[in-house]
Image (cartoon, rainbow, N blue to C red; front, side, top):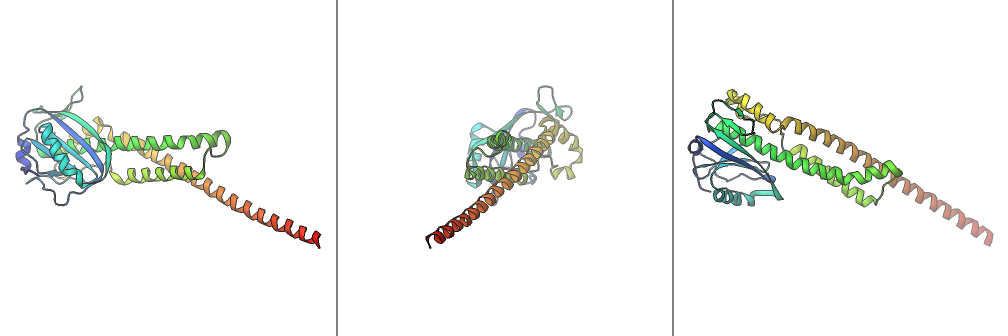
Length: 271
């Protein structure tokens, strides 16, 4: 991967308008052996990149690219894709317009992110927020699909008091729900503060504005509520499945006993 100094790469972006683009590639990104930018930050990890392109990566599968040409960005992503575990069939993207050289950090009425300068800490905060927004978008889609798949079972229970399909199909749905829930809860803390704020407390206000702009706290809370609902529903379904199995076992035992009684009665008549 072509190398570039961390501060030097950021200096090339000073002034003007830039596009920051976060791409969620998969479940995890193995950064072992990947060249980091000289003097770059480690939260998120700044990667070495050609001059004019600043790149940050998160081990939970996201890459944020700021500046650079489309060709340079595509080449860098192509180099990283073999390192992605469980790649998404369709990567999730979030983008934002950056206006560098503003009087103060903030968000303008049209949604552009205003930055006093293109310092690495400021760019890293933007990269972190964009990447988390992409992760939330993916989780929202995944959990919506999971709840939609569970809806027919819930509707059948509400109207008929029983499942509308086989236990095997229900178990597959429960398994998918548990998998989605596990991935969403262990993947990324979307409303958590990046470590760089410990060294740059003056950027706390920019961080708060980015959190508000991308609604990270609200979306994270909504996902928590959805995860709770999925958890309660899967627990209920699992209990009902177990109850059905217990009932079938008990019914089989009763039938066997009845068969033995009938058999004994027939044998006594034959004698």
